[in-house]
Length: 296
Image 1 (cartoon, rainbow, N blue to C red):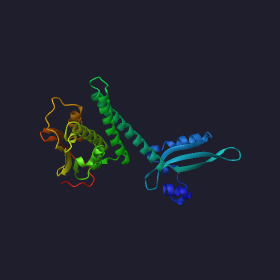
Image 2 (tube, one colour):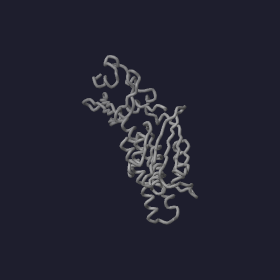
Image 3 (cartoon, rainbow, N blue to C red):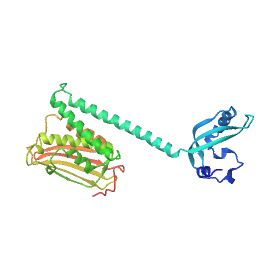
């Protein structure tokens, strides 16, 4: 047995010489060898046959086989030449690529569903006026910035502080008080939180604290002990004009209170205090979010 084959299968030459080739074939693939032999008897060459073989220690190894019939001077088949290539790394890369493509397809579909919902609500009046277009484009830009953030993180999630900073980037930083422990969010939660914070910031700029020179917004979060731990996030405005509950809730309020609560599997409450709007978010912190965060 050649050194390469010894490295591939783990057998020394003296351990396998004289033994049937089936020693290398897993139980569930024993039918492959008769089919290969039949092709060789017909004088056919087997090119790049991808299969699985078994090492000495019983572990599987993915290989590509090229097998050619060996003929004597009279043209009679007297044996076979077999080349086995280890394709484990390539097959692993292919599976990873398939997984990534599937995940990307899933996320694109989710994003398109979100865009569809935004468009439906933005243009529900049936009039494609300039104001409706501005609202729609601003929501898409917020979604796009969230995608940029997640792409920089290889779609492995994003820190909550980074999500907050990304949403508030268009505004003056000194108008905000931001604080809380680092917590890594899944991509889906990061997108949902982005849209909710965008709606809160947009509303504050139009009617709330950010519409007044001295208005401020505090965005704070903690992780409370529990099984599982609980995220408590608060958006609190102060220093703006007096606030009163709206006669009818718009898309932004519904997105915050319903969609965000659904994505977080938690609760979201908006209260219209005279001193400023308050939005409280409470949600369990699953293991998938945790990144060395200690409950406070």
